[in-house]
Length: 144
Image (cartoon, rainbow, N blue to C red; front, side, top):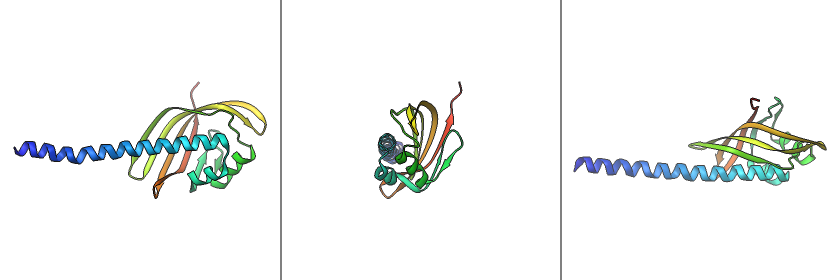
């Protein structure tokens, strides 16, 4: 009987934790989709809302942007996504931090010059209140 009680007690602790993890992953994936759409639309309000004030945004070329330069580049058309797909997404949530890995591919029109991009990306989100905010992004070139 003690073993059964211990097993039930242990399960009662584990199940809510797994459920919270799944809910955290689901809300994080919603934030990733919100970011993807904001990158496509170059919507300054949505970009401002999803980006942390402390944003560190690194491109695969090594270029670094803070929040203001990240938003300005998209809104001005310096960086312009015509199509944008995030594939092979994986997420990890630990407390108020969410890490997302994915492959970014899409057609671009940066500064009026058509192109295509396919890179790996790591996104780090942090919860601020009830919202996930993009804290850091690191893009990297994929092996040929």
